[in-house]
Length: 147
Image (cartoon, rainbow, N blue to C red; front, side, top):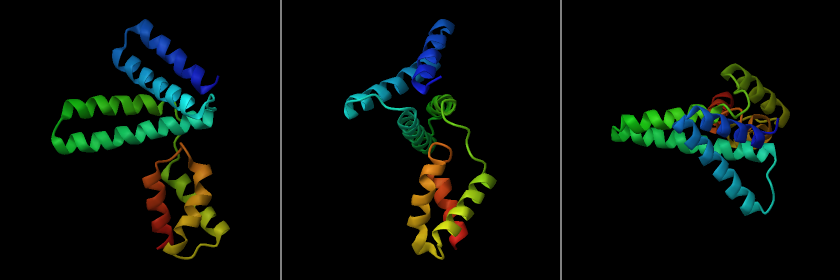
């Protein structure tokens, strides 16, 4: 089943179950996807929809961080619930060990030797980890391996 169809089916299910949080989060996701379709003047494929969902996840993580700093626990809880829901539509996330193995492979394939080569390694890794690992974590692992 295509990702767009999965989102639509999940929205219908949330409507039937009267799950307002889930429904609003899925509607927000579909709205972002539709806006991006309009922007591109075509329907996005699953990879592009996944990238849109990853962007929404990044926004949720940033909101969680800011709400924690402001002491707004009720908003932190809401954002964390939405983040968990969005992650259901992303591919299986890589474990740290799997990520470290991919980074080691990328370093050897790009012949990287120092922190100056980080850009080459990240560029090589991007298609492999897109939607499957947080960019900050990937960057952290690459820095650690190149140090």
